[in-house]
Image (cartoon, rainbow, N blue to C red; front, top):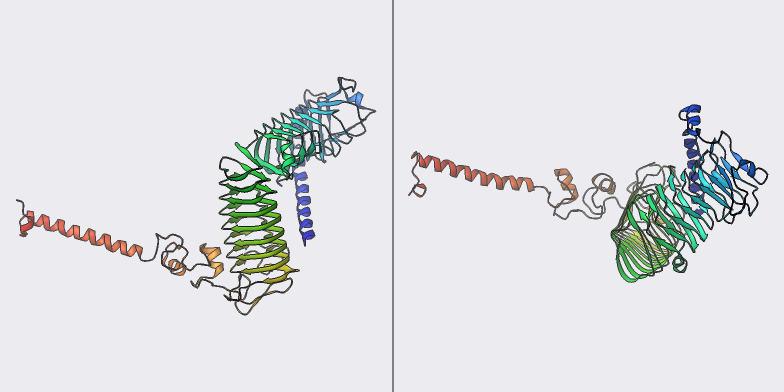
Length: 563
């Protein structure tokens, strides 16, 4: 099943990439040939096809230089608008130095500038505008310099090592949230750049001897694959702003409470017995990452972006009282033990809570609304308890989109939960496969779960292994409102008959037109108030009339006479 998920993700990426190619292909055509020629005005070369530069022709494309380290070939003032690679360096020998400068390149192949051969600082791209699916790069483009360029693309390039990336303006214009840049390995400098994204990521993977400094990120953020503190400490990562606020990097923090309200994004690694609270992350690729930690509490975290919280290689993690909204993964955990997830509210994610290779997991009192592919996605978990959770999903692809999916779940107790599908109502909600000792009800309480496709009689069979819920329910709190009505229509608590605690059950307050979520608005309150006000107003009116009549000596009331 895991491979099936990977296939679906790969298919989505491929389809999105095709769409991006189509969209980009339309941009340069605006204005026709006259527009292209106008843009090319003042440049030395104009072409509608790409060029391949190698040892045999590099001198002919150059306006100066000999290829030596102190006199690189200068290839400049190109304007190329093509459906292929605008410029491809393929067959330039190691030790030949060259600079591509002052050019405007538009491509709808893969790269705008592609460098095939291994470089050791020989290649530089300076003061260029590049518009392509990927801007500049290549699998062997090591020790590459990119300076003072404007790059527009649908998918950011990834660089292996030795990158010098400075003073550039970078825009990810794709709909799919990919990356603005990816850097790996050692000896990288990414400094004084401006990145514009769309909840896309600045990807950092196992870097050493690397500088990431003084960068400004708009609607994008960092994503770290590195999870070793020793590696992080060998780098300089400082003075980077995300949406106008600093990036919070917390390494080797112990026995602390970290108030993260001033940070735009947070990453905590190799820390122990630490609380991170009050983070508010908006328009980022991911709100928070936790790697290689022990005894960590995340509370009052708010994320509105692509992904919510990621936790890896961590023991003893508590996530509570947080609000997460996005369209990727809400809470994503891998190789984590002793997990408590409680009283969180998640909205809009493809995968609400995804946990793989974990043990001792408790998921209680969470609300997951408008999930896409899976509300809960569980893989290889031992010792699992889940109760008092609400999850709603828009199932469109039967058998693939699910409210709840589990694979190799062992020793699990799942009850008092509400599972609702409001999409394709003929599709199954659940799938539980290769499970061992999983119970979908509490034997003592004789309580199971609510399933929106249960017909209201008998037991409920979980597709997959065929486990049975002996005690499915429709109105567990006895307030005469079904779970579907409470969750989807009235937004009341299906586990409490009186959601606002004002002494009147939820059903009575709908029926009476009062708010079942407002303890100050309850049936009869308006009548009582009217009586009180009416009484006061009525007595006052009577007293006023008596006073006037007495003054006019129409009636005689001794205690009202003027002395």
